[in-house]
Image (cartoon, rainbow, N blue to C red; front, side, top):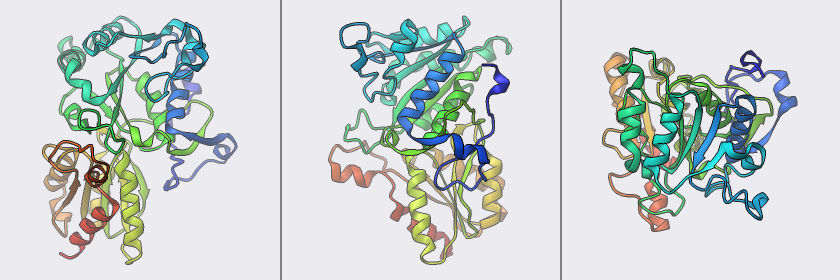
Length: 362
């Protein structure tokens, strides 16, 4: 299938979408979980492009031996069935992130398009040198002539009872590094379109999947399509306060907007989709309209996406603000294993609504 046969326009099919949907969408879309949408994106890109390969721990799940049809396909089953279709292009690796992430980056410089699964983002410390000191810098160091089209998929976020070493939202660490693109979808439609875009991109992309959204379903077209980076999704229109978020907390922001509407407060909710690059135009246009901003981030409060957005808006659109910017983040503490405490750790819709009301009180 040729490149021009792909749809390149973002058509959010999230229940909160504000963008009109083309008539053909309703004929081709069906409900998919985010997990299955990612699987479909990988399958379609591997079918289209023989240079796309998958690497990771247990992503084939023992395929090749007895019972390969029942192989797991990774800890969450995201790559289940892909070995059966694509064979040795789906490669189980040793338990050595520094080894196979380095191998994926090297393969990307030699003509392949690897998609490497880091499993949990918490393991980034084992292979971070390969990512931030090598892959992110090749294009700059070689005068723009070197390309590293590698995608590193990883699970992020709390709420899965996986304790402090498997539950972090470390997205801000990647956005600090020039040369990396960072993507965090919040629904199945975005996950498929953004992953296809990531695979086709010629720069290294960190593709973050919130583990609590794998079973979240939305309408997803069967045909391949790509969502361009740096195009935020306005999930809900409003005129009183802007709420900016991404990933799981984008849904919490929508919960807050629903509660605020009961008090006749119209909140505009923006899902960033990509954290590097950021769609600053959509954020600034909204803030200039509402005059108030709440930024929600599951990451810790210091040097987070929330602080980044808050600083940029303060610097760029200060005169448009009618009240101080509010941030709603997780505490500056490790993720607790206690279910009750973990549920409180992630920003809630109630906390977001309170922050919005605080901006309106000024």
